[in-house]
Image (cartoon, rainbow, N blue to C red; front, side):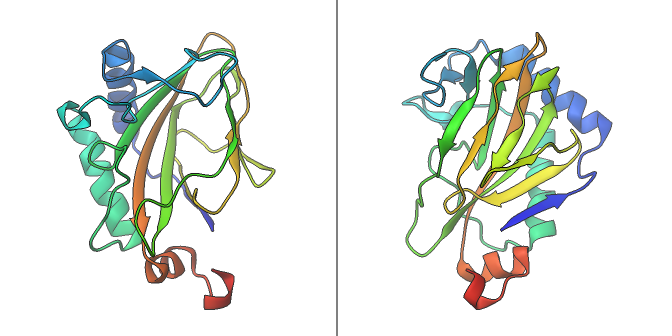
Length: 189
């Protein structure tokens, strides 16, 4: 239940997303997470933490990318994870931050939680996503889609002064959508 969409973003989209993040990560809608309790301010995210996420004015490109994802994955009536603003979370990580191994919740009955992640700016070293013990060091234009409610995942420590920028598009998908997205047989789900 892992799929990589190669060359999904253009250089202009990557630049726009990174500029937005770098210009906004000090705003109050970015908050520290508990994903690395050793270094709590090494990773900031727009994931809801009591802030009204409806007030986040993401760049227009993010909504265009979301629409492209819905079309590419054939998701007709999207449900979004509640902590995401309109189905989108932006995150930035600084050395030595990491994300501990975890599984995300299922937010709605009879669904699976799917994340479609873009690492639009890689750190100098580290910051690689590990899913079920396998590293996925995707290119900045690629989308790493995986079922976070079923697969253990983590991110290795970030090394260097270049922050790691993540754009996560989250969907709560049905079993039929999961089968279509990942080309699964019913006994594989």
